[in-house]
Image 1 (cartoon, rainbow, N blue to C red):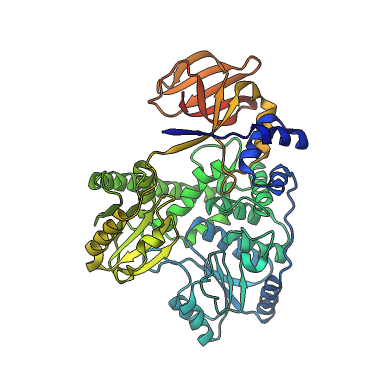
Image 2 (tube, rainbow, N blue to C red; image 1 turned 60 degrees about the horizontal axis):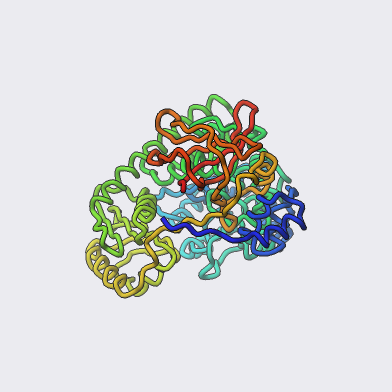
Length: 534
């Protein structure tokens, strides 16, 4: 693995001086912020959510008030991923609190696919709904919107996905129509604007929107930053039992990392394994208050996620056995695969092999698959002109979803292999970008300042540090498996631990990993979560 060291010392010294922060904190700001405004955003402690006053929001509120006054039924048309489920829960609670009659519907991923369909609109009309609000979908639901118009149903589209063609709807609530500082909103954060306007700031919808922002890997600037910080603050006040119950272990201190690893996969698993469970039940779960019900349902969700993990591990193993390591593009189609898991498997293979990968499973009409790529291989360009092979195609440069005609599997494979040979591939060696720091810079005070820069994520990536200048006091293996170093910088005791069993170096010159505060039973100490050593 190639190490790339970031050189930011000169800029960091200026930031430390002008903003009165530790040298460690200043170095992180120097390598992650593009301008002074981003530095000020990262350092801000303001948790205020600015009220939105866009014309689109005002129009949506007027139509909702009309529905309430007339006693009209409102259907919330949601989506089956974490963002869509959170958005649906936010809007259901908000509309009911505002005295409106509403229902909701999450489509079946395998049978119905993504987004509002014309069939759902027709069924809604038969059930007496006169207004539909989409959440986390709708900008591409053109046949459904046309059907709604034919049936005299108004549609308010709340979505954040790229607009290829302007949707024909009553109102469009979208980051583009909301403007700054909401231009990075996910679907649930767009829905939150309606909830805030209807009922004012309430903790549960804010936590749901924060969770969804992390889940959808949205840029952590503008309103997303105070939103996620506020949501995490409420979680750490133990304000949301249904979310905490999804974790496999008790979380001492909730951060964006715990949300991403403990909560998001479980919500997404429900949509992926739609043949095993109904995603509509998750919306109900997210709004539960009864501890007994929360415990019973959360146990089921955790079990389904465990099933998802087992399936993805098995499918990844099978896929790796089928690929040729020498191929520039990995193409795997297997009749035993589950279509809800192919994206996870494609991502795993990409990470292991550093080659663009397409994994396909049988579907009702052919083969459904997910492709994943590295920067340097644009999937949209690679698949361009192959539309005759597809029943469906959508995505962007590094990720795409496709459905392939049954008789086009081998022609597609041959075409892709031919095309990939005609273009240069990016370097296959993984590059680890690190920030060199001296062990003397690591103090509890400095790490607390570092914590205050959170949340880290999209466009504000967490930093890997290369730490030198530590003295090893003791080297052991925790649970006889994981390397663990007790070190000191002369004033602070610093614990370093790695969960990579193959590491075995009693006296490294440097530790590469993330810097954290280890919190246990009210005690805090400096810690390095080690990726590798030098």
